[in-house]
Length: 384
Image 1 (cartoon, rainbow, N blue to C red):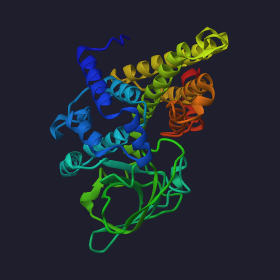
Image 2 (cartoon, one colour):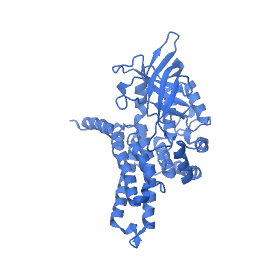
Image 3 (spheres, rainbow, N blue to C red):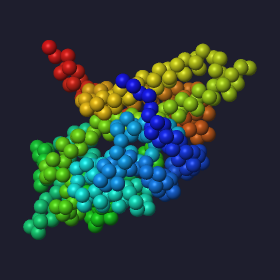
Image 4 (cartoon, helix red, strand yellow):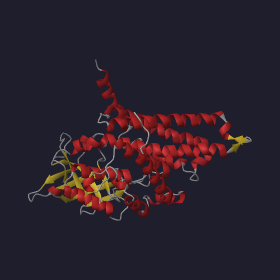
């Protein structure tokens, strides 16, 4: 495995830094968190720079690249800005449409990329009674005599659901019962009559807020279905593993930003007549942080390398997220200890990053779910 960056990747990273430096100074980021969304200027500049097109098929106007490049872009973007951003939510939902949808659906979603808005698309999966237990979903469609479908139900924890132009909604076909395992994906424009939202307030990651979505006899047509009837869950599962990898990349970037800040601070802060960098307890914090960061980065790049080689990452991905996200939260926790009371204010960003990182532990699957997935795979791996 060779993790040396290519010339193209180095240029991309340089472009990301220039973008972050221009639109994400400390005051701008604080304002974005207060407004619960990034600025329209920053959103449009991201798309105009071509970043939103990375990894999309060339036939829809995308810029094809390997998964490692996408992971590096995600990691470095969150490192240089030091904040959580909406772009991965957008691209995950966009690729659901470009990978599984019709050319007409792909054209719609790419038109939304060009439209002036802070968010393009979101994915609506969880429900009040159905998180990890997806069979408990009750949101469903019923076909009508005129060939249309009525969508009814509620989704929750929908990231960017109030700002996105489109929702990729998964719903059961016809029957909302627990036993029904037939799901379809639907592309729903968020101004469709019958779709309303309710704001949910998070303690972290405020730039990408949650909402409830309520579907009350939302009329859909066959051309709104993404992929084959009844195959919706299988389509989503095809991309869950890489989405979890991107969650880790986001968290790693922000954790590294917390490390940079805290590690520089120890040489500036004077206590007992000397920089606190000379105190062994402070050095221990730095050691713990660096070990975690190096472990996560190595495992992340190894997992993505395997994916680019066409190998299965089911076990690697589950182990990665199980270990990475809780430990990256610990990196920020160590940073707070180094800053002491200052870290518990908004004068420095370590506390904000800590709150953001805690949310990544749940995003894309909790540690408990990752343990369950990895445990099953390990039994198979070592079975004689």
